[in-house]
Image (cartoon, rainbow, N blue to C red; front, side, top):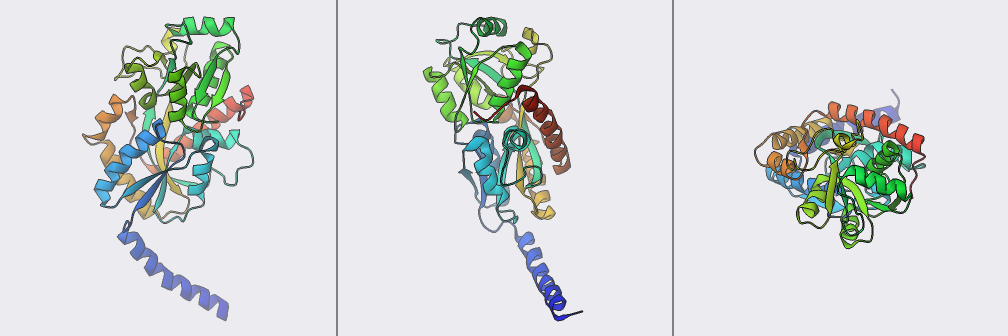
Length: 324
């Protein structure tokens, strides 16, 4: 064994105890939770809800850091390049983890390998909402008739290219043979403000962002994107039951960490995360906002991401979906 090999081995032996101690004491300082979108959207709402609960469990601040831009790729890159020490995690979702790999070419990181899944948090059906001053439709069939009569005359907003609202509406247009103009925003919050103001005509976005505006009669809800109605809003029929057979375009959210984060830390967060989701406080809150709690293992979350990456990649190629 030469001198260099001996030094390398000695360094590894010295580092191992320090790493074990660091993991054993985790967290001994604040943990930042990257939200790759601006405040006010479903990703932000859900991230703040789980961060508050994790903070209580671990006794350290879980600090929300909004890093919006480029359909979530800006914030995702921050996490991908962060130290894998458990002090940076991200609220990932269908867009950042399953859609962007096919939609954005030339990313500086590979979403398939850059992150370590921690756990799925929630399945969130989208709600198709319209500005009633701009869209004279009371149900999905009336909306389809309007869209077919005036191709590309209506606009829909999303929280950014590759966001859940973008992909869900592309799927809706493909299923109904309709065409609209896509207006991407730097987050769901600004998009919702413009929808309410009448700058854009409609969106198909997550319940946590859509339902409060609908309940306050600021927008009109025409349909839900899942195959069953929301328990928190049973009065809104599904898009499928209104004649678009089999239409199912839900979104999902869950925590990830930089690849290489120690499994012991991943497991600690996952255990606390699942306990919170199965508990009496957060689950009813999620259901009231149109989300279904979805606790599980990191492996189950990894498998979901892989399946969804294949599904939405096929849609992107079939529709020539692009970053507008």
